[in-house]
Length: 410
Image (cartoon, rainbow, N blue to C red; front, top):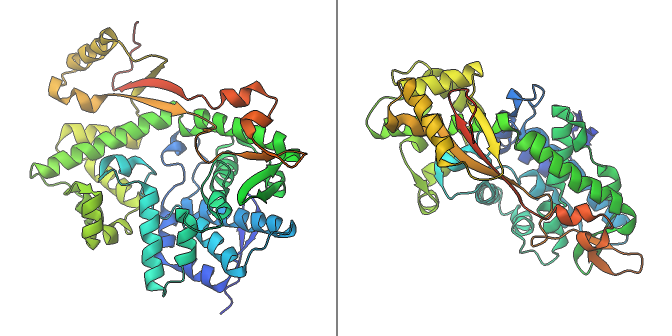
């Protein structure tokens, strides 16, 4: 069987599967599950074209990894074939641990279990099934492999993950401000003292990359409608869990039901393999099946939230630079009470939160620029744009979501 397939990708054109083993990983059910998980969760309620999946994204990131490794080899850096394949496997599987609707389930069915941990567990299980053939990829993913630049290509502030999702999300949402010069950035990559760097000639492309990331966060990832819909979904799952815990019958597919009936901590997940097995089975379709079924539930809180999600009758949302005042909260409580909603149910229809955005965090894996004299400097110091330093500042916005579309008074 010919496993060197060529896939037609709408963003990059033709993508070639680099090896028979990578083909086998793509064919595995753990990876095929990503076909059923949308990359942008509920963003389609804002951008109708945002229907691409984590399957698309993983393949695109693998493609960019191959281009980056080609660039580094062409500049004289020795990369063994085993390292080449391992790096592509690590980026291919970096999102395998995402649950339905991206981070929603991390906030509802788990207790402090991030998707990065789940991705690592999936990689370890695959390696166990396949005779340890993912061990090198796991080292690169974890950052324990001695040649650190491989980990930077997989997880840093200029990794193949970010480059693909910015390109891909920009393409499918139609938000042109998110466009980045991926080809040029990759051609400018180099390695100095085992650190990934960008040649000085590529500094303008990096500046554009950081600005595009900032804009995409405000316009797509932290769009008010996406936040509002996610809040409603979280409240629906929260209500369903409370009903289940109180002994009421609530529909759920078996694998998802396991998480509705149990509050799963990290230690429990590690000790009981049933949770891992169930997690690798759930996807967006399970959650939508629940939302459709719950819209007819006798519990009015659960049914009203789910019906509103199905009909896109979303809560009102309002942002502010400072936390909302007691007076503003009281206005909403009065409106909810006027609609006949008991005070103990207000938390389902009134949710406060905050969103933060920092396009570049200098305390993390820094973006390093190789200057003309061969020295290496942080992008914030190498750039002559004052806005790059400003992008390091965390911008925080407070929001409140509520059911009645009224306007708050200060």
